[in-house]
Image (cartoon, rainbow, N blue to C red; front, side, top):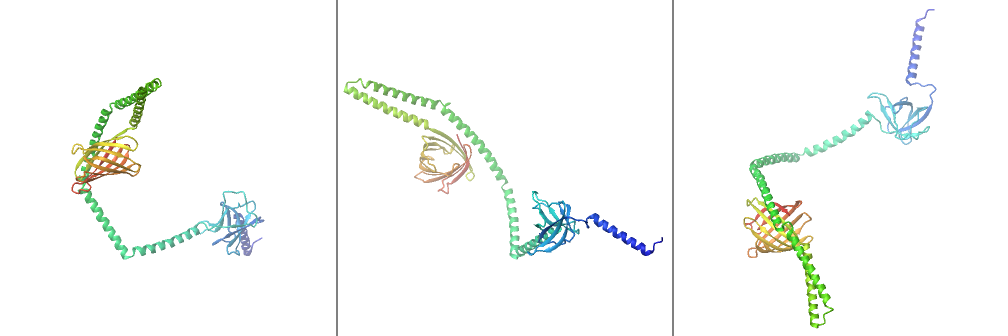
Length: 419
């Protein structure tokens, strides 16, 4: 049987339609006997989403978009048909995504951390903002708007002629400042080197003075024998007075002579007084504490060194004797003062720099002290001093002598070491 041209065209057409339907069925565009359940998702916008668009859960195709509409609240509602056998956990994130720049839009479902509850049939879920290029464009648009406002503000500031002139003046001032600093560094290079050498010499001198003070303290102490002998002497005196008191008490009952009884009573009284005085003296000696100190300072204006040595003897927690020599090797001025300390304020009176005077000490915390000395009634002078503790038994010292005498004023800076 011979086929006509019309028959051939019809057969080819039917074959093409069959291939098209088969392809649609293969890729899921047409599903026969489709089962599942509807799920409603409300979005603010559904730009580009079409009916028949895919629904993907964690990247897996689980349904289709069957309807698009608007709710009474003015939101865009997408009706999804989730195929049978696929459960969507409550709390999943719904958004609109796309495959590439020009790809079709689809509903993307991101699973939550907990998956113990699932959406029921015809449940309503809230959708989030779009993902991908749309989100990027929206964010970029907001960023560009802010940048535009920033550019306008900067233009208003830097476009002002007065501001431009101020910036130019600032640049010129910085240039002059750096040039001045450069000249200063070059001009004072020798002075800086000289200061470094002077500090090295001062450190060596301080080390020598400290060694001499150590030797002096060892000579006076004699390995602790002086204090030990004094303590033993007082202890023997106290023991002897106690024995005398006991002896007198034992003889008192047997003495019948009134004169003898009076003598014994007097002896007992004297022994008791001697015992009490010995006890008081022994207690005072036990409380005595000594502290030696050495100052080594340098005055740049006077270009000279100044060394001081002092010894402070504390008779109790508040009272002390202060003695020493100032400006050793030059003026050799003697100092001897009686002092009393307090929690914040202390005072001294006696001989200061070889002249009668008085001093006031002010403690500003545990590590800083300021002192003021007034001396020499015939030619009144004022001395100021400050001490800053920078380490164990080590202080940074500043001292200004003759503050009220401009022609004789000199200021020293250096270190102090106590032992």
